[in-house]
Image (cartoon, rainbow, N blue to C red; front, side, top):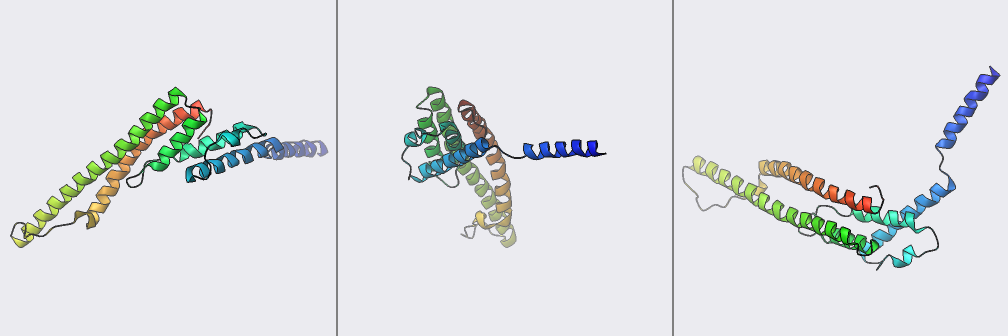
Length: 195
């Protein structure tokens, strides 16, 4: 019985040690977090470039990994009419890659996706608004028996419009996020980083 207990204790001790990170792993994880903080500073404008950070005496690879991960996470579909944060993140990645031609073309495609998304979103929203406006005007004309009455209906205030727009926008976002993610995966591969 003592032999079984001893083997069980060894297995438990090995399992416990497998769950513990080594000092090097902890240090590398801290450097990744440092890189993420540097990227956040870059996006906010408080860090002008990455050269001084990557020339530090410690291993620059985990720091670079953190920078790349943070910048890639900031390349998202724009909310509203601007995608400046995504563009700044792309510019930072180009700086990290030292202007590598293959990445420049990937980022050009990504910028095209973001610009096209804004245009496509505006066009579809206008189409949905027009369709709802027409339906509302027809419903008012049927109720009153008169066409128009000079009243302007605001379809964006209608709950059905909100539901329909949310559904359509979700589908649109899904399509564009998929295309964007494919490009982000290419960039991550180029930097040998997982996102």
